[in-house]
Amino acid sequence: MSAELSRLSRRTLSGVTTAARPAYDPAGLATGIVHLGIGAFHRAHQAAMTDAAPDVADSGWGIAGVTQRSTDVVDRMRPQDCLYTVVTRNGGDQLDARVLGSVTSVLHAASQPDALLAALSAPATRIISTTVTEKGYAATLSSRTLMTGSPLVARDLADPQPHRSVVGQLVGGFAGRADRGAPGVTVLCCDNVPRGGDLLRDLCVQFLEHWSSSRATEVASWVSRHVRFPNTLVDRIVPGTTAADAQALTRRLGYRDDALVSAERYGLWVIEDDFAVGHPRWSANDVRLVKDIQPWSEVKLRLLNGGHSLLSYVGLLDGRETVSEVMRVAWIRRLLDAWLDEATRSLCELPDGLDLATYRDQIVSRFANDGIAYRLDKVASDGSLKLPTRVGSTASDLMADGATAHVAALTLAAWLHYAEQPGTVLDDPNADHIGEALGAGGGSRALVERLFGSHGIAPLPAVLQDGFLDDVATALNTLRSRGISAIARLMA
Image (tube, rainbow, N blue to C red; front, side, top):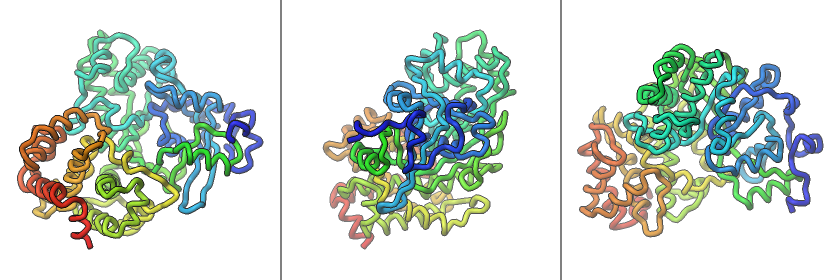
């Protein structure tokens, strides 16, 4: 059916009547932002908020999006002049649609490295942002160190040009800016990484320390003087758009859009107010500029992201497929409440202006939104990277205060039990190591030690190395012997 409809482009934009259109002419939009990792999340979050900024056109805040290896996004967006639709799902059959024009171009880093370097080095580029997922930074997150032995990083450190790793690309851009006398630039890490700005700065510094180029010291000096790395927090649920969903939305919209993304209505972006050369006039309803991101980050990572992880592993073990489906299971809903209570007790400081009771209610209603088919297997990915920061930090602060962290222990046990199920294919950068740990035998406590011990695959803080790991092993034993129904009976 979609083949019979006009495909979204600048030529057909005037005929769109079922979605709001840009308040400016996309053809005249200049580029001021380069974004590494232009997937669905960026298009529904940062690009949408920038599109709505009143000065996006007047101040040239268009976005050059970059995809690293796959050409899928390029193939979807270029024929549409980089226009695409964001559909917000409000529950049931309610939706709103808006065409965005904030993306000015899409680059394929693997085949267009020179164009990427030119974009990163351009004087008009004032912000470089990233959503490459936790594993995309080639870093050991527990120690926040660059994996210098990673093939892409090792190649870049040996200085063949152009660079291929994300950190190498950033450093190459900084070197190009120094050469051109370009102004400073702000780097925004927009992944779910605690203090991601600090992490990216540290990784760039480490890269420069190991870089074989004779220019390393010069570029390091330029970076220290001209580059800002404010920490950020991003929050919006953006499920993958399935073929069936895209077909249904196409019928409702009446035009073809191969780059369409759907998202929940809620959206929040918190950024530390430390920019090198300005930023768009984002709406205060969507973007909060703060002095310190830490309280916001802890609330979101522990309550929302930790709750998501809990639901994913418990839900998958219970045979569920989506987050909203899990929220209709009474005992799992009570388990989520128990997690929110536990995570709340772990918080040391609340963000200014945040009503915690309202925030918790929003989490529950967002998870229950049946207009968003957020698949549990997607939420469950990269557990070895996510769980130490989401769940381990919660347990660590509780145990340090002499409190218990039973739901945290159950969450880690549920991940391990999910991983060891026949047919499970882990989407995790440490999948091979986890598989070896699962097959090494020795009982539940030995497995827990191999995963979360101080020298494990996903090491947890010292305060958790004794009693808490025992709790994880006990919960894993329960799941192994009695299945997920044992937790259901416990929460009855």
